[in-house]
Amino acid sequence: MNTTILVMAKAPVPGRVKTRLCPPFTPEEAADLARAALLDTLDAVLATPAARRVLALAGAPGYWVPRGITVRPQRGAALDDRIANALTDVRGPVLLLGMDTPQVTPHHLRVDFGAHDAWFGPAHDGGFWALGLRSPDPALVRGIPMSRDDTGARQLRRLRSAGLRVGILPTLVDVDTVADARQVATQCPTSRFATRLSALRELERSGV
Image 1 (cartoon, rainbow, N blue to C red):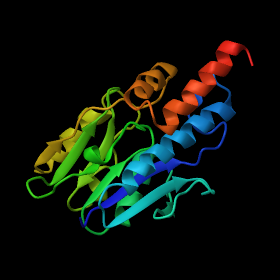
Image 2: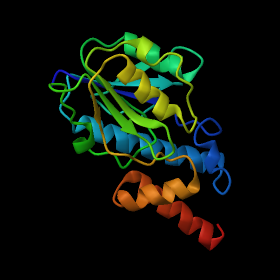
Image 3: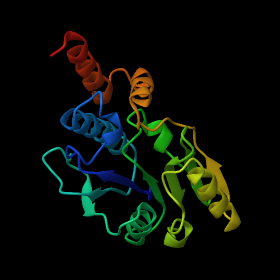
């Protein structure tokens, strides 16, 4: 495949990631869950045929970045700008996704641009977990208000208004809240994310 898979993520630093999981979890525990989710996502990326695999990272990379992943810094303030800027560095077809869906599999990521100009992966909360573009164009993303319950609808409308033939990927649950985390863990019970969540819940029950 000549597609670039591009993952947008934050470095798993306590107090900067998954803050909506606190409480019941501490910032350190939330960061552990974020790192597990990101690594599960990168596992799926590495198992998917691709021309390039890129991690656009907000923050400093660490030992946890696996081999085979190229790290580039995110640029910009608002999320739509950071996504748009990441797209400017890509040549050829691209599939962009976030770090909040550790249940993702290579099956989800095998997109074919033969019959579609774009692919769109809706998220259960009204956002989107994936965006594929045969011809990366930052203007297709820039200006879309992010982290709202109508973000996905606005993004999909932008794609279709540009005259693109859009394929729809399965709807997935983003991990934002503890309820989300529990639901996602049941979908990928052998993942790092589910294993770490189970361990934290055991600690919580034992009062440690």
